[in-house]
Amino acid sequence: MKINTEIVRESARYVSDYLARNLDSKFVYHNLSHTAYVVKATEMLCDGMKVNNHQKKILLVAAWFHDVGYTQQTDNHETVGASIAEKFLAGKDVDNDDIRMVTSCIHSTRCPQQPTDKLQQVLCDADMMHLSDKAFMDASTLLRTEWELSKARKYTDEEWRQLNIEFLSSHQYHTSYATKNWGSHKNKNIKRLTRSEQDSKALVKRDSVELVAELDPKKKKERLERGVETLFRTASSNHMKLSGMADNKAHILLSINSIIISIVLSVLAKKIIDASFLLIPTILLLSISAASIVFAVLTTKPKVSKGIFTMDQIARREVNLMFFGNFHSMGLDKYEWAVQELMYDKEYLYKSMTKDLYFLGKVLARKYHYLNIGYRIFMYGLIVSIIAFAVSFVIGVHGGYAAPQ
Image 1 (cartoon, rainbow, N blue to C red):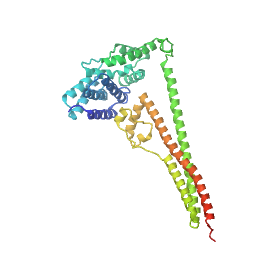
Image 2: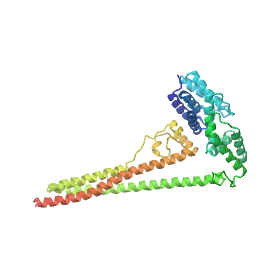
Image 3: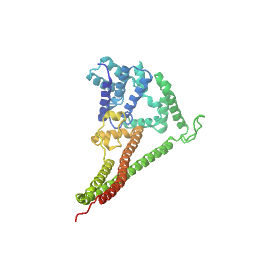
Image 4: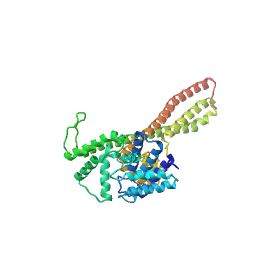
């Protein structure tokens, strides 16, 4: 059997679960977050290089498995990863040719990379896409931490900076797409490292199209992060206050109409027997109060989802872990793992916070929509009810109604 879409999906689920259960927490860089990143880069390169559909599926499977070897060893982990992938695919009755291509692609990611065909070139470039990423400095910091934890390799800031400069300068992308689209961004990262090496606190003149900026990335980053934290904290607080106000208004509407219904049933119900002309306005008033109560209840009615997410969803960064409805039915171990993934991926963290604000806003819109309808029904309905009672009294008097003696 050739590798198909279902095999790719099963590979994603298998690797996500395998890494969650077997990868040591000291691997803060080579984890599921990095694997998902490489999978996305592989998709991008496949589209850019016009790779056919079947070869793309082979590459996606290889991308998912390329770093699973870190669960057993750091050195020569590619061999372990290829072996795990081969065993998995053989169990799915995948053709030997496809298995061979997957394993050869995984082997080709060993540094220094020396790919021998187009598929290997694609995976090698996808594995190194982070070199041209704007968040390269963050990825570099995670890798430095991982090496300190897993290999007991400690570097000074200057040593680590120089090591990165040498690696980026010697590295070359293999595909034409990566060379054209990522090469210039990688060179910018080299310039950033070189500039920081010269004077991390000084101001330098950039190209005429760029602004003069402070070159202390740490301070700049801290200021930006404080601003972002303030934004999310303030927005979230405002959303919660507005939600509380909506619930209070709904409670007021609910209480008032409950009192009205109680009074109508206890007082007017006895008189309707002798004053039948009050029947229609009484029913009208009760109906209006009941409708107002319904919309007040809809305003405060909670909506809870199934509360379960999959490892694959985390790998694709689709789950908002900030909302309890997405995880309340999950086990603690899986939730802790997912939160760890969130903590080590700043982009995923900010996206989750943004989604949380967005869906809080959607909930608020629903609350205030129902609340607005409820208050309109109550306000206009009360006016109509008063008019109906007045008209009924006039008709009753002129119609010869007399109170019982």
